Length: 93
Image: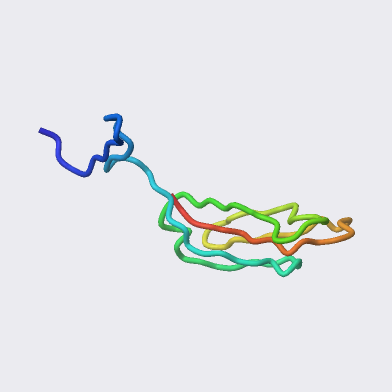
C-alpha cells in the first residue's frame, strides 16, 4: 500500500500529494525604479521563478529580469520616459 501525504477535496478529487512540486517564496524586492540585482543562495535549491507587479500606474516596468545562478537582476529600457517602482516576488519550486 502506498504511503505519504494525499489530500482530497469535498468531491473526492485528489488535490495534493507528496510527489507534487510546490513553490517556495524566498522574498520580495522593490526595484525603486532603478536597475539593480540581489543575491540569494536559495535560488540554488530548486527551479527559480519570479513574478513582477507594478506598484503604481503610468510607466514602464523593468524590460529585462533574469536569474543567473544565485543572482536576480533587473533593468529598465533606456528609452522609458517614466520608470515604475516594481515589486518582484521570487522563489523556487
